[in-house]
Image (cartoon, rainbow, N blue to C red):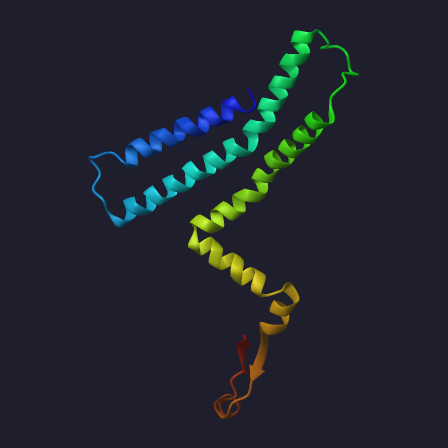
Length: 156
């Protein structure tokens, strides 16, 4: 249920949005093209979610079914072979990697997001503080007029 309900909900919402945007009654405008791009992103995101989590749940369902059929449901000391343990470990890592993949998917499908991440990674926090500082500038006009000095932001 922890897998089927989220996938069913995401798929239902995706189908409803897709049906509305790809309907023949809507003319193709720039706004609709952007919405269709979002739909492609959502479809890819749902596919990645399914591919990451399905193996984990399938291994658990098969393992529990085998234990149920063999009659050792209550036996905590079931002899699990190393292949199963390694396979289950790999599928747990794959399932949890979905959280790592989501930002990458956003970056791939959203140019604004990608540009912001590049900007953020190109400047370190301390470098940004040192580079974006306010420095007063003395000009002949400000000194002669008696006006306070104008702050200037220096960036590189």
